[in-house]
Picture 1 (cartoon, helix red, strand yellow):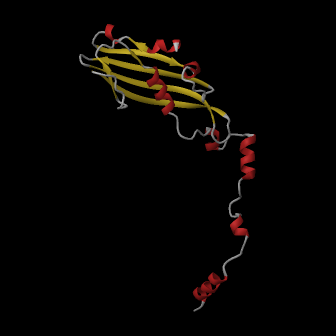
Picture 2 (cartoon, helix red, strand yellow):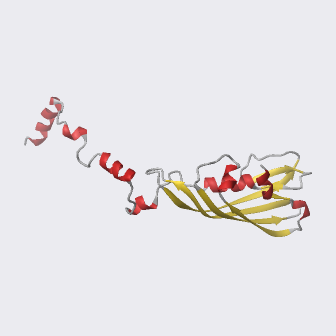
Picture 3 (cartoon, rainbow, N blue to C red):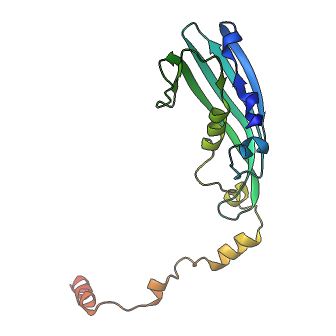
Length: 180
């Protein structure tokens, strides 16, 4: 957790007003959280920190890419990341993070570590299903993709259509429709 000390902002020494923090996130950042879904990462985080007299406003903006494996073919590819998140920090009696957009910290606190928020911003920016762009436009040539196409059922030739066994009662009813 030594690496995460770089993400601690001692706001007590900051003047009131707007401040800017810039973080370059790579794969080692995610290893601190035991998250190994990324082959590589290169995400730039812009943190706009606005210190007011009674509260703090933080706006995170993430932009870059993470190298992940495709959920269909398991081929690695660079997935673009672009997302934003706003957080308001208020002071209260006890620590409370029940609301995802408002953090309440005790009055005596003098610093905030933003590593967890950066981690969540990037991980939650990923789509539920990660599909290689080459699959969508048909340019990806992969052994796995060829095997999937080979094993997929051809259209119009399902097992249900091949077996022409029908219930004789339905055949009788169908005759009624064709009789005039």
